[in-house]
Length: 469
Image 1: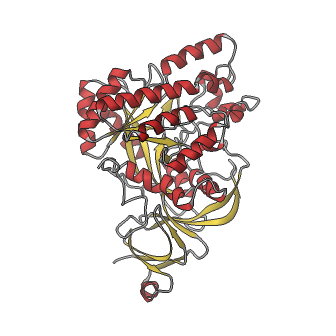
Image 2: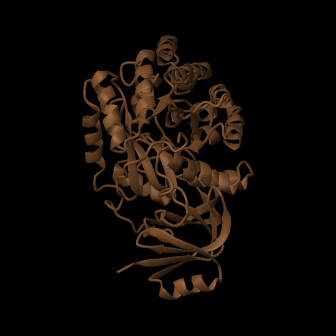
Image 3: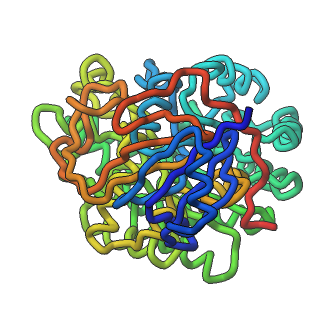
């Protein structure tokens, strides 16, 4: 039996169009669109198993969050959201696909790391998911493994110029990985901060008794993000490889990306809501409260926000992901009391991204179509998921969000669904809220009730970056 759902009466928004249209969903995919009141649309409604009324609402593609860390080991603990709780929270926030990071342990194979992440996530996810691979140990064996992973749909690899002794790769290792990706079609993602220099500044700050969370931001200097961004762009040029710079937080790093793009290079940039809405003011909150906002790259002084918004408007930044990596304040963030360098790095946000970016639409910072572009369509294209994900078109998965653009909400740990004991946006008032979410045609959120289940989400092998073809 074919199951038919009709979504009627809404304003359909994609990265390309805004049209008043009804949607026909058959067996988990979008079958057709037709204008409101069209006789064809009327016939769909007569034969439908389910009709969802989107009158006065937006109908948008489910969000694609291309940067999350669920059940992630860091600083002697694990991020507090599992694949079950994290994907459920993502659905509440209108995200229907996420790409998480599998981790290669030093001395182990990429395959062993990927197998571990499949075991963590299997039958746990409420929405569809995929993996990037973190390369912690670049050597002849792991370089060969990169080819095998690309062939089976893990087409992006993250390296770090930060965290010496944990994830850090030197310039030679980075160059080798980039050369390999230039050959196999993979995309290197770079955490760009000069970790060797940062470690010196951390040591000096602690020796001077500077132990509070705000010093986390002060030692991870803007110039050390810009330097590493510049350096890895040049390495990518030498390798003839594309580069995707994650969590860009500062105007100077963005300027390096913009300059590379002006030269026609395949250099891409991502930022995150925390850099657009929060600042070093949060890191300075009293009574160790700033620990809630410790993440890397760190929050910056407020004046960097306008440059990042401008970068999103000019397409020097193409994607907004969350870098969702939550640690509870009690018992996890508190590991760093008396030593900011021991505060687990990461913040919650997977549930808030779509709403925060809609607030930017309300405030006139971006257009509605740009909202969908940076949160849905571009991440899907960047990581080989489009047009299955990220758009509303015949043949695409029926990952749909009915979004009420008028309702007022207040963000709070009391009401969010992420498994963490604080909200990074506590008390922030927003206009707009997710009302109903479909994942491959199945109701996951039904008029603000969770109706999904662990195990609905499917693992998705990905194609290569679609901006390189």
